[in-house]
Amino acid sequence: VQLEQSGAEVKKPGESLKISCKASGYMFIGNWIAWVRQKPGKGLEWMGIIYPGDSDTRYSPSFEGQVTMSVDKSINTAYLEWSSLKASDSAVYYCAHRGAALDVWGQGTRVTVSS
Amino acid sequence: DIVLMQSPGTLSLSPGERATLSCRASQNVDSDWLAWYQQKPGQPPRLLIFGASRRATGLPSRFSGSGSGTDFTLTINKLEPDDFAMYYCLQYGDSAWTFGQGTQVEVK
Image 1 (cartoon, one colour):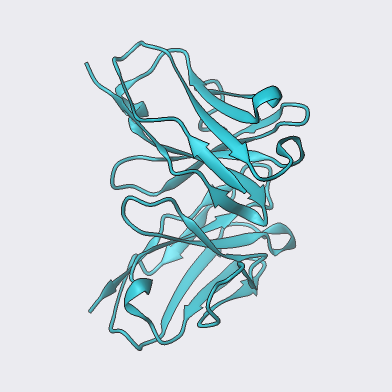
Image 2 (image 1 turned 180 degrees about the vertical axis):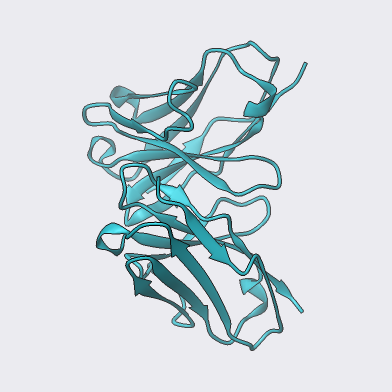
């Protein structure tokens, strides 16, 4: 199982953004993918989880309405999207495979939002 | 949401000593779906323990997890230099998963 995330992003407040997490080494549609945020110098925050098989998505109440999770089954890729970024969205975002708990993690995507 | 409180915030120990980390939940964690992670600077978290007490593949036996319900413990016997890091617990039994705030294990 491997998860390869897209590269670092620098954006301005109000801009949109979609980051990706490409899965390999297992049946993509059969396992949930979670997203986790880590702000600079802070702890881990669970954002939500999506089932690629039918796009069933569960958001943390803290992130509901703030981000959108989606998948493209044809290319084994999960996405995390913002329609209007804020400075407070600056963080490293990880995707993780739901096997035994979250057992395999992507390398992280650093998102910097600054004017 | 289930709130996880980790203690202590920082644990200062010497190599060879035992580390005992606590994770206390505000409500019962269903089916003991509690995991422990190790994280080092600039790296993603690494799964250590799942199901409260089951070691991840390849994890040295000096790491062990215990507990049930609302009280869980991660024990690291005979600390090695590579073990000094941040540790987080995660509950994944509720519809909204949550992490603890972390315990830093540092060299005394």
